[in-house]
Amino acid sequence: MRGSLRDFRCVIDRPMGLREEKKAEQRRAILRTAAALFRKRGYEETRVRDIVERLRISEVTFFNYFPTKDAVIMAFAVEMLEFSIASVKRELERHDCSVPDRIRSLMRQWAKSWDSDPEFHALVAKQSRMMTEAKGILRERSLQLYEQYERLFAEGQKRDEIRTDYKPLHLAEMMEGMLTLIAGNWVSGWWENRSDSLEERFMNAVTVFLEGCSAAKSASSRAFRAQGRSKTAAAKKIRRV
Image 1 (cartoon, one colour):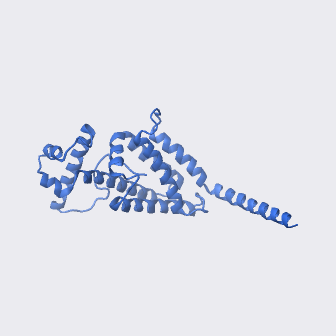
Image 2 (tube, helix red, strand yellow):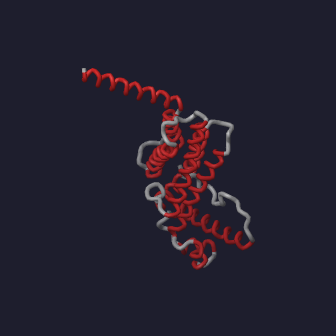
Image 3 (cartoon, one colour):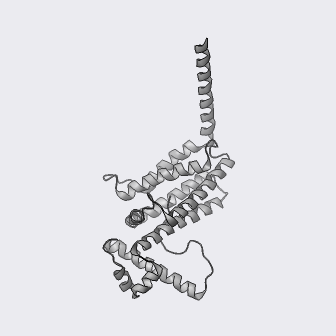
């Protein structure tokens, strides 16, 4: 699942020269101003001219950083994905709790951040199409996120916490697909008369998913399949007789 847009700092701090720092600060200022105007006026009603006037910069300066207004939205979407990638990486570095607990922690964190600013997150998700048609850099970042999830599930399998009869990447895809659908329904207002928080929906889904992913379920599933094969073989033997 995708992360928070609470701030627009770089996910990974890198040493920069004075010129690069000034450019980075100008970029952040454009993003902050655009976000404030999108929240106040809406995306369609906000023009590039409105952003540059508030910042007191020229349109040329704006276009040096973002070729279009849509590129600003794409930058927000990329930051969401980079935040998510960094969050999973941090969980991969932890070894003080189980993988299922780390997954629950990630989901709760993301749900709370989206719940804190639902309209803006919905705007970014809709305008960037990050949940339905991720292309270019969005697809690249999404694949990186899947790689981190895959590593997390693989660790869970090594620790005998996650079932081993499915590939880690397949488990990551199942979880991401489930949560993307829930988030998509939530941001689009699919359930018009429901007031359940995104956190409640996420945690309910993750609880059911992780129960199905448990190593114990894997053992019982193998036993069930073996029993099924035994019954099938017995039935074939009877038919031959």
